[in-house]
Length: 294
Length: 280
Image (cartoon, rainbow over the protein chains, first blue to last red):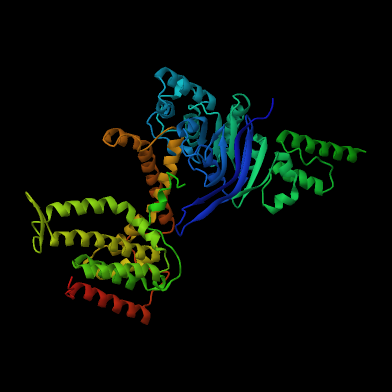
């Protein structure tokens, strides 16, 4: 399949609170290309411009200067169909459970589709589909009260509320922040499923390198308002110099493998997926046993 | 291109712009006192000349505090409709009350005289002056300083068992959370817009529909406000806050000669605005 860019960003600048004493330059010449069906991670420290960047994807922020093209729509043009764009790009904010406002789960997920003016039957189908996607049982959960849910479930409801718009591109700002480990893993699996099986283009911001290693096809590293580094997780996590320069953390597996390597064991440091890393460690252990017996 | 969601942009209350000017460094108690008296004097002055003086003074204070005047003016923007409505109402209805001077126009009960025109112009200018003055005060004084000032200026009222500390705490918290909630509201508007909500695009006469459109923002904001309040209570209690206890302060203010000079000039200007018979 030829790779088709769905998001193209070139030399993007953005300044908050222009012409006030609180003026703040958030983006200074960022560029990025996302192909259809890819899963992209954006990492970087607080204040590096990640949140500002992703708000450009569905036109919440318009470019000050530079080029933003989302699925063929040029956002620097004044007159664009902003609602169609927001339907196409589903943006899930940090702590999205805050945005739940209806009393019943089903009603809250149905808010978006109703706003699209869809007929009741279609809305119902979409709500059911979206709830299936995040692992909530439609019949059992749709008439439950939203306020009585746990944090993890609330987040699923909020995600379903976005999925019910049937977006082509799903953008998530720290999707697992503040979740317990079980909900976190569940959510990651759902996101992976949406990306691989439903063919959604996924872009997510994360501070958790395990997540990045698990999900991302490619990674963009942001610092001081620009993209400073990009590549596959292998490229990024094995580039020791740049890891240090931009103070990027690495998954624990990478740390273990590097330490083993430093101690003189022959391991493959780019095998950072948990199962691969486990195999590498087992290999070392087996070698060690062999020496003892021999 | 300004973002349609940049709400915090127009909020100048509760924002502190540290430029380190001498206005910033004044004793906050004296600053608050002088500004209060000046605002009172301006509110009671009805002459053209007096208000021109007041306007010049407020512009000078912006310059002296090194805060761009454009920032102060942006705080006036939201008040413009109010000023216009007030001016129109005064022009129509106040002619009978202020019927002195020359009569320009008469139709039924509507009288427009040189006195009622003076009233309209002076009250519009006065409004601008008061907004500018209070902006300089809040932009050049941090909320902590302001609270201390309020508390110490009101402290004589303790004698009649007035809860001075509680009142100043309430004021601080209220001011402190204005920008916070502006940011929360901005975030919520963006989040709901991402789900297809639109605000303020309906016809203005469909008030009920437009109010309903706001529910997806208002309900979550209430939730957020309540949980923030709970957090704040926990944070205060875990630091042993007890209502009604006597507390010492981290910073103790001591007025210097400079502060007394400002107090003297401020009082002088206020007396001038208040008592001097301006010819126009």
